Length: 186
Image 1 (cartoon, one colour):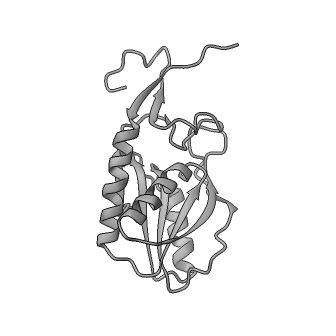
Image 2 (tube, rainbow, N blue to C red):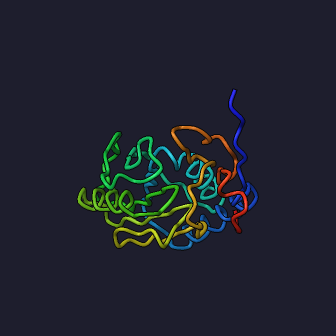
Image 3 (tube, rainbow, N blue to C red):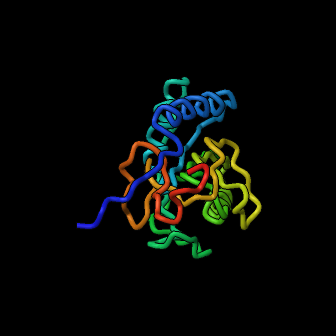
């Protein structure tokens, strides 16, 4: 059996929980009407579950939907092409929509989803991401709610994976490799 890789924690459970509560209060303060939260699968599933519970504690009662988009498949770099693997089932016409995604990197997936929902008649489409890598943007898009600015590492955990592994981790981390072991910040 191969050695289990070491994973260095970037954002631990407590940091993530605190930030989810802060973002939920910010979303509630903006008072969205008839809010539909649309989680971008698969990477955001843990984040959106914790976020909507925090939104409940902040006095909100959003409806929740899912869209499964992919630009990675089994790679660690985006292909640049976004595919709809599972579409939203709810009618978004006239509704305020909050897209929730795990990470904003190139911006292609989030921009695609925002454009798709706006074209379907959503009154407003905002976005919330757990992690943002500002230096990686390939399209012009800004998330209204951001958990953390993330260094340019390939991260796993808290729903994020590499080839479907590591999603179960309760924190966000970086898989250490021999060539990364002495890098500062990881």
